[in-house]
Amino acid sequence: MDKIEKDLLKTIADIESTPIGAYNIRANGEKIARNTTANIDIKTKEDKPGIDIIVKENTVNESIHIPVIITESGLKDLVYNDFYIGKNANVVIVAGCGIHNGSCNTSQHDGIHTFYLEEGSKVKYIEKHYGEGEGTGKRILNPQTIIHLKKGASLEMESVQIKGVDSTIRDTKAYLEDDTNLSISERIMTHGEQYAKTNFYVELNGKNSSSHVASRSVAKDNSVQEFFSDVNGNNKCFGHVECDAIIMDNSKVISTPQIVANNIESNLIHEAAIGKIAGDQLTKLMTLGLTEKEAEEQIISGFLNS
Image 1: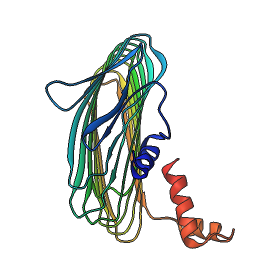
Image 2: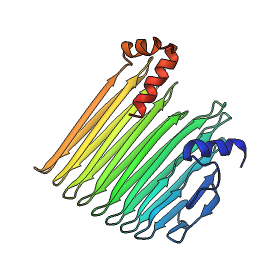
Image 3: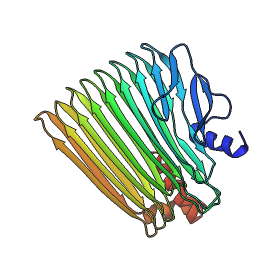
C-alpha cells in the first residue's frame, strides 16, 4: 500500500500495522488482505460481492477489522457483509470506509451490513467514515446496517462521520427480542455543500428489550442534515432517542423523532435540540487566550464527544 492508503486505514480503523485477530481489508473493490482465527472465519460470498463473518459460540476478547478504502476516482463499490455471532460470544468489530478522490469523477461506497446475534452474545461495532482529496469529484458513502438480536443479546454501535463526505444516507434497522439491548452513538460533521441523512428504525418486540439512540451533529457553511428516527414499542420495553445539533453559518438541520407505543407497558422517550454555539462559551474560552476559531473547534469537539 502507498502512503495515501496507509493514512486512510489509520484514520478510519486505527490500523498502522497488521491488525491482531481476524481481518479483511478491501481496497478499490478488491480484497488485499485477510486473516482468520480458530474462532472467527471470513468467507467470500459466492452470489454477490461481500463476505460472511462467522464467530463461534463462547468466543471472547477477539476483534475483527473489515475496513474499506477507495483511492480510484470514479469507482462505485457495493458490498454485502453478514455477521453471524454465536451464543455467548463477545467481540469487537471495526469497520468504516475512507475515500481519497483526486479527480473530477464521483467515488462511492455502499456497504450493507447485517448482524445476526445469537442468545447472550455481545458486539461492539465501530464504524468511521472519512473523505479527502484535492479533486472536484464527489465522495459518497451510503452505509446500511440491519440488526437482529436474539434473547439476551446486545449490540453497541459507534458511528462517526469525521469529515469530507459530500453525500451520505445512513440507514439502520433493528429488531430486538426478549432481554436485548441496542445502544447507538452517532456523530456527524458536515461542511461546504455537503448533505447527510440518517434513518433509524427500531422494533422493540421482546419483553424487557431496550434501545438508546444518541445523535450529535455539527453542520457548517451551507451543508444540510436530516435526522429521522422511528422507535416502536411492541412489548414491555424501554426506548430513548436523543438528537442534538449545532448549526453554523447558513447550514440547515431537520430532526424528526417518532415513537410509537403499541403496548401499555412500553416506555418511550424522544428528545431533540438544535442551536448555535453560545456567545458566552466563546467569550470564556477566548479570555483564556484562544482565538475565536480555536474556541469554536474546542466547543465542537467537546460537544461531538459528549
